[in-house]
Length: 114
Length: 114
Image (cartoon, rainbow over all chains, first blue to last red; front, side):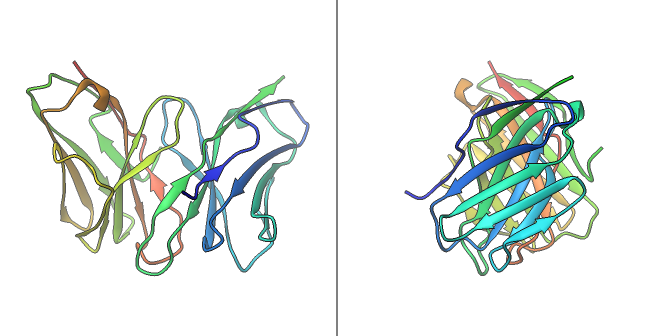
């Protein structure tokens, strides 16, 4: 079957460094991608999204890059802070049209060391 | 705080009990979702409601029964659950199930089946 996966299950960075979290997807029909942050004891929190007609999108301290050629998605966090420590999930809408099935990747645990 | 409110936050129930999980949103969203999340795993889609009608059931056992009384409320009725059903149950909403818009999650109900 087709699925969303992540290259690195854990990532440890120093405070102030930039972080890059990667995600591979295999469904070429997926047209919408989202990054979520989940802190312990909380639900997933929306960070940023990108549609398949875009290659890059920037938010506050975050950038999402989409490479459709190699089916790769990444989340870049600038000047990582201790509050960024969480599990990060990429998610894709594997079906377009009237069906909206948002499927999550395995997740990456980001730890920020002070 | 999230704009999707779930109650209760924690629930312990026996295998013969009947209980309900509740979810409420007032963002005017027309699609609502139930996800199940086991520890250290990504959320897994259970049900999707679009305009108060069930549009997706991911082959969920009948001991889980969803209900959407109106566009702001979503319930999940539980009956004769098994210990392996213990998990975090997440509710989410989005503008519309046919639109590429992010899901907004509540903080979940932590369910323990004894």
